[in-house]
Length: 285
Ligand code: FE
Image (cartoon, rainbow, N blue to C red; front, side, top):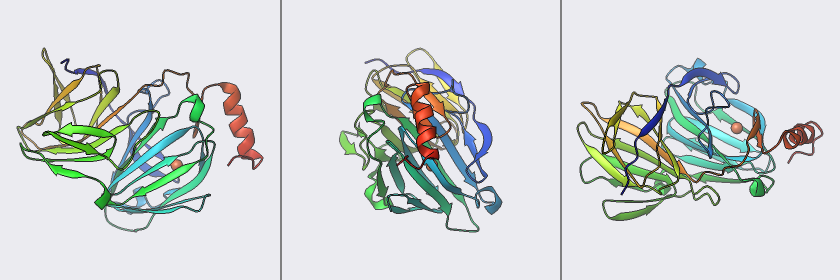
């Protein structure tokens, strides 16, 4: 067994996107801050309507996948394929932009808390021009288990074995084998999880700090910091004097060149120019 340790800490950047939604961006705040196959990780969290009410009006994507996971609030997804998805507290959506999707994500509330995450996951060259696809996941479809030491674990994507139980999430990505967990640990407890040795993994505590404990050292992550992990087949996480809620994300690296222009992510400059031309000329989707 080789334990994973904390390799790099990314402090998020407060920014805004879409129509002007305030968010915290960790991965993707610069084009050098990626963690193959992950391109971007955003957290949005506010009780002030002016921070989210403008939503994300119609915009395009090509060449990657997204997972959106809502903790609180209500947004409506609509796309050019005719999909409509209600993102409510505890629900998720998976979207593969493939060769092209045009969609909007608009708040369905004008007060109260809006809180959640959007993760961008790259697609390999062979899948970038596949037709777009979409999956809307209700909270009841997301497996949740009570952990033996206290706390809970939800699996949104991939497979994991915990407390001798094998769990599978409602999202299974073919090329990157995404693992997407939402875990809550009570104060002064720890959890060890198996991971695939060479997957790239990160943890993102969104409530309370979290410690990554390896054989030789402990690495501390403050709330809202993304922690990139070394390779290894096991990961030990510890909550300190406060409870900790965090995302654990892992995926198979693609090891391909990445050329990004806003919402288009391809392998070469030429393919980006093609995406821009296709979008301008109405040949996008
Ligand atoms: Fe989008």
